[in-house]
Image (tube, rainbow, N blue to C red; front, side, top):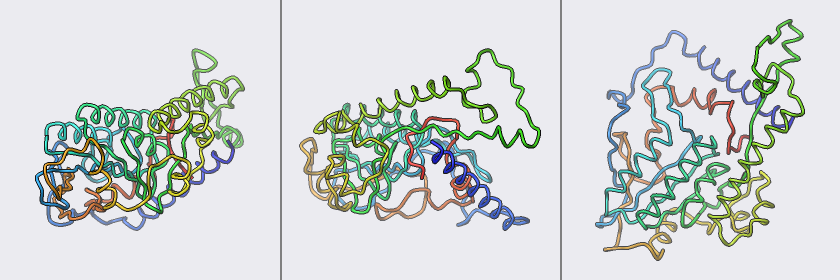
Length: 336
C-alpha cells in the first residue's frame, strides 16, 4: 500500500516539474499550428483510409492507445478532443453499416485506465462482434496491461508482439494523505459531513479501519468482475488458475502465452493472416484492404502509424506529463 502511495507521489511530482520546465521554456512564445492547416473540428466525420490491400473486402484496424478514459480532453491551446470511449463507439457504429468489413483488429497499446471506461469499451466491442458475427481479434503492441487486457477479452483471439508487456490484472484506487504535512504548517480541515464515512478517502483526514475495509471491499468487488471477464474471454483457463495469475503482476508475451493469457506471439502481418483463417471470416476474394477511420489529413500508409499523433500544439505532451487520468477514481491500470 505504502509503496503504491510513494509511486503515485513520485509520479505527480515528476510530471508537475516537467510541466513547469516546459512552461518556462515556452514563456513568451506563441503556438502556431503546423502544416498551415486548420485545427481538427470536434464533430468532424471520420474518414476511411486504406493502409494496404486492393481487394473488395476490408479489415478494420481499431486503435486503442493511451490511457483508457470516458472523459473528453480539454485542450490547453486547442479544441476539445472526444473521449476514447466516444471515438471507439462512433467507429464501431460506422463499421456496422459497412458490409464489406469482414473483420476487426483491435490494435491495443495501453496501460489501462478507468474501470467504467474499460468496461464500456469491452461491452461495445463484444456487442459488435455478436451482432456482426465477424472475427474480432486483439493485437498487443508495446503494452496491453490491466484495462488494456480487460478490453481484449471481448475478442475472438488475442495476439501479442514478442516484446509486449501484458497482464497487471487487478484494481487500484490511488490515495495520498497529506494530513501530517498540513498539521506541521498549521492548516486544518474543518469539513462538515452528514456521516462518518462521507469524506472517505480525503487526503486531509486520517483513514479509519472501517473506511479501509469499505474501500477494500469495493476494490475486491471490481477485481472479481475483472476475473469474471477474463474467465469468459479465456475459456480454457480455470477460474482458480486465473486468480493465481491475476495478482497484479505483468508478463512478457511468451510468459502470457505459456500461462494461457494470450493465443500466440508474432507480428502484425502474421496476425492478419491468422484473422483471415478464422472460421467466421467470410471472404469474397484475396488481398483485403486494411483500413482505419481517422480525422487526420496526413498520409497514412502502414498499420504502425497512429492517427492524430502529430498534434499541432502541446496538448498531448502536457496531458501525458501532468494529467494521465483523474486521481479520484478506481482504475484497471498498470502505473509503475
